[in-house]
Image (cartoon, rainbow, N blue to C red):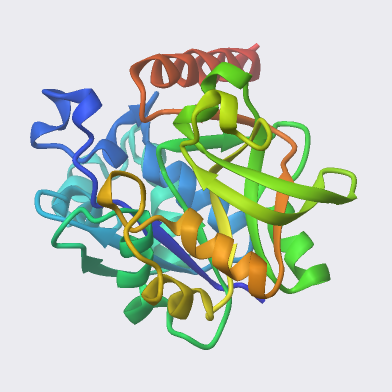
Length: 278
């Protein structure tokens, strides 16, 4: 049912300078695979085969990654290294990639609105922020879990996780009423609230399922925190007019937009690979 997944990938990645001076942060590798490839694989597992990517200046490496490299493939053909391209070849064969640029960094809401030309305005779509690396080794991926929930409720859904009370100021935070285990009907959403003013410790992370009317909500939303167009504010308006759900997902999330989270993810996946080899 949900075939399109939008990847906002236009940010500068300043927390990783100087590494991201010439390389997109979405191309930073966790072991041998770039962050954005993990996100694409998660979207594929959830049933998406059209990947819409919002890029910016200096992001051509993303486009090149999801394309055939004839010279490289010729050089390693028949060698033991050829199998190392199996996963990316499978992605290229099965998915269509479309791109547009966000010329100015005006917030996540603006980036998603720029994606309207790619995902259209007639069907629901997923959104994945690649620097939120999510994994669920015990079952369905996070986006697959959300798609199943969408099939039941047919409304916008945001992924959430509990965070320490002293860290709520780093996230969009939801207020809501429990509907079933791990599912909340959102009544309010606040972007980066003060720790003592947060309505809960349920923080929104980089996975969304959005319905097409979100574009009208974004269009009617004024710039908020830091002067940026916040998707949190648009979803809050939608929650007051219709229904938005917050889903406390099963699995683990790494904040790979931070050095600490990036190192934690690298260690986690390294240990996973070692266990597979044993």
